[in-house]
Amino acid sequence: MMFVAMPMSAQTYKDKKAAKKEAWEMQQQQKAEEAALLHKMRMDSIRQAAQRAEAQRLKEEQEEAMREVEVNVPCCGEEFFSTPTLIRASGNGQSMNQQVAKNMARSSAIQELTSKVKVSVEALVSNYYKSENINMTENFMQKFQEMTVQKIKEEISGYRTICEKYGRITNNGRPAFKCYMAIEIGKDDLLKPVFETLTNDQSAQIDMDYETFKAEFDKEFAE
Image (cartoon, rainbow, N blue to C red):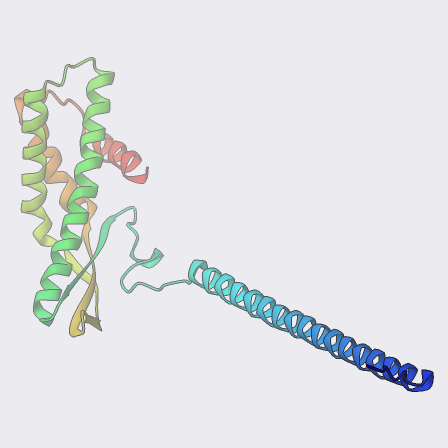
């Protein structure tokens, strides 16, 4: 068998060609890796920008939800506060029937007015008993509360409506009315009968004139 040696120039050319091909392949691989890395960086940048935008949107939504918005409620506010001569209260009611909404608003206002007077009278009498060293028993306290509330309910019918407004709302997809109401009653018209009831009851042991009673009531009512 005979071996034929290739010329040196041909071998060198073949090696150079292989080396060139290998270099080109490495270059292509490097370019592909660089392109993949660049693509990843772009995608990461886009994703981070989207995350920042979403975080900013959520922050703005939260700030909007927490932002205080002034609400003007009809038949409320300073012009419907009690005065030195008038006791006032507001209420509201909601119903699919306009008249029912009105009745609910009236009941709500009357209940608020009754509660205001009852609490102030109870505090007044309690302070009076303490100052006079009179023991206010549990039985009398219950009787006193019932007597006071009953008299207030009897006299409060003389109230006057000073504001009555309506709005239409949607409740669970159904239309409804909302009524706002403010009422007032003369302080003397309500307090005098309550004072007479208490002072005429022997068990109450309240010995004060009406003007003192009213002055003490004003102190409690203002707190």
